[in-house]
Image (cartoon, rainbow, N blue to C red; front, top):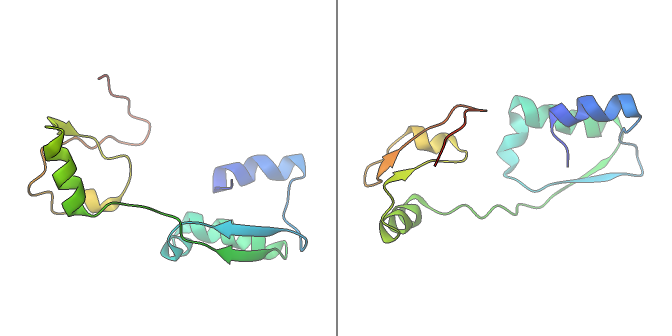
Length: 106
């Protein structure tokens, strides 16, 4: 598992990619174009590692999420991630967005 914060941990310990390594990006390819994805990709490319892209995400559509929220009679939804929650939320119960690191008592 790699993300920029882990690279900062790995490098001082001597963990760096090399041409014998392969890495797998299992999320949407578009994420490689943001700052974090580009950092991870460059780290492996600089080490000469081969990349494999296997999209394994299983996100539900807004219609399925809306149906699920109503079936469980949700009073409030707390999205875990995703910018799509900042857009049209018509038909959902109250949505509470938490900032990164913000806690919530249930």
